[in-house]
Image (cartoon, rainbow, N blue to C red; front, side, top):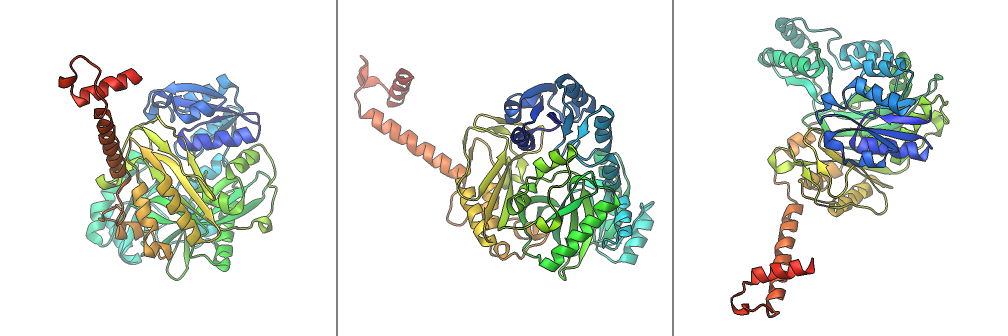
Length: 503
């Protein structure tokens, strides 16, 4: 492996480019019309234009990506996460074109991509399952009958779903009848498959995942756990490692369950097995993500393992260079997903130009992003612009370090969810680790997001600009105007003239 095409954009493309550079590999970026000035385009060794801004005409166009690989003479393709990262057909197309796919084999992607099929594989591997169906629902009345057998509430889920799409909670028969056709329609539109099944809805569970790594020689290890319970409408917004719920005994059992599932599908490269954990610490298989996760940095921080570099080394054919007993955990890490969105307006995306930028730094702070001052944030893609990570000896110290970094993080010109995180990290229940997957929707559904006694970032910028303008005008009016009509010259016009003269 000498040259890697990164089939992605934004911060994850930047992350892979940096790993390639440290390993002495050349990197090839691709970009759409909206991303001509993107950071990943600037950092890569080579960059190729692949089409219009809509992802379907650029980043999701398999043939265009393969054409760039051929033109650039790349010998590997790294998909990152999102877009085509879990697309079996894309992985196979790369292999058929003689390229190394930096990810699991297509067979593992296919096996784990179908939620019903993956439940059957997990059951055969002895991994605990949430009570529910392991086959497709054929009719509404069948769904009502099976829901009554399992007991309400139930979760209706699209078999090909992911990312919070294609799932609804039904608390009675009427809601099953109402929601099933809606989920079928959403699943068909989003995933091209309207298969839906149901399972028991676990009240206030924790969402905990296990990171696994496997080589192509049959060696597998896990890198511990991550807490992913901070979710808004089934979408993760912040993660931490390790989970405050975790015990050594529970981690060992969940880790072995994750490895058993990975062995069952012949898994290699990086992957994540996700579980729900109830109040009694019983855990149940949820799904397996056959790719790099957005939240991988928190695991890197506590283990010292560069997961992206590991992906590349494994894809190149290397054996795992450490065993399970070599995996150790140091300290506690937190990650906030910083989005260009407006928390005060229903978290609507907030595209625009980054007018000013001051990134946090200092001990224990990492900021993975693909932005810079002057960059235009496009409406065409996911509004994730940064992954802010803190690492400290204890969980509370990591929380305080994150709060400090959030206060330092200044992004002008667009709205972000930074004030939302400041509120969360100051919350007493969160700081005590008393969280579950409904915590954010329950606690922060309709609150004033400004911290008590503090102005928002936008308010502070507005006040500062007004104060600077007033001071500038006052200073200028103290100096006599040298023009012939000094007595009739407006102070505002005079200020403009002096500014032009200075330019």
